[in-house]
Length: 78
Ligand SMILES: Cc1cc2nc3c(=O)[nH]c(=O)nc-3n(C[C@H](O)[C@H](O)[C@H](O)COP(=O)(O)OP(=O)(O)OC[C@H]3O[C@@H](n4cnc5c(N)ncnc54)[C@H](O)[C@@H]3O)c2cc1C
Image 1 (cartoon, rainbow, N blue to C red):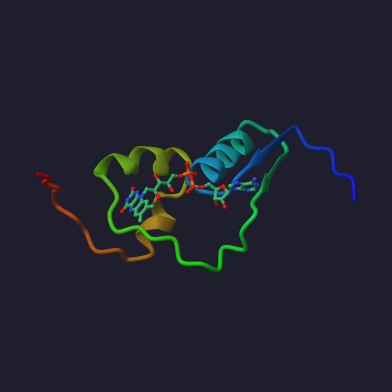
Image 2 (cartoon, helix red, strand yellow; image 1 turned 120 degrees about the vertical axis):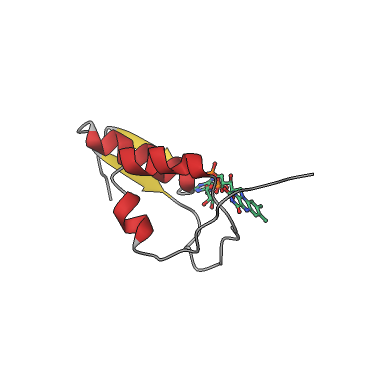
């Protein structure tokens, strides 16, 4: 099969998928090539508040909120 695209993003993690979404917003024809089938759980516990801006910019904020994650009111590390 042959498919002509503007951009091929290799790796469908957060970086690759965010890049692909952003490029689509600029009108590029993008394909994400991901080697996994996403069936394995990807471990993640928390997101910093700063995640809001990129999610808003990608148009994903409302979708993110609809997942009803527990709010975090601060992060301390030692
Ligand atoms: C145990 C653990 C816990 C974490 N917890 C948190 C957390 O609580 N909060 C947080 O913000 N961050 C957390 N992180 C960090 C977070 O997972 C990373 O910052 C984030 O996944 C990086 O995204 P990425 O897209 O750069 O890379 P990745 O998520 O690694 O994505 C890369 C993708 O590329 C694919 N790939 C690789 N090689 C190829 C290839 N040759 N062809 C096609 N596809 C390929 C992989 O399958 C993968 O899907 C955690 C990380 C770990 C390991």
